[in-house]
Length: 192
Image: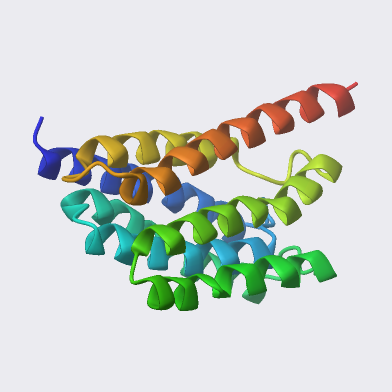
């Protein structure tokens, strides 16, 4: 398969995952944590630019599409009054994410931005992990499964393999798998 076809498949998976997720938010079935989605959206868009800067080519496109839709989900979560409980640690995660651009500028190396953003994105899962631990049925796991698959295909679609281009989608895929397992275990624990 060519990189363009893999990228197109990853973009289709992005829409396939987000469409029902957005629909479930609109129906009130899913209540995403607003702050997680703000951090994820900002981080994902900047990572896609870093991937493009390092020659990721069409493999960066699914990440850019995802980041754009993620920002929409953040706005929708705020509008629909998803979980808006914000802790001091959530602000720290956002501040940490914002340090990526100066790091990229000062080092002239997108890898530093990707390292910081990958860490920030992973830490940005904390509010969603916390919320889902308490309310394990508040998230749509099909979405997270498609997100994992999308990230793996996006890696395959990259035109240049380097730590800068691979780190973010690989770590997010792994984090998402951990999240899915945690939610499934919690669902079993709370179901009579």
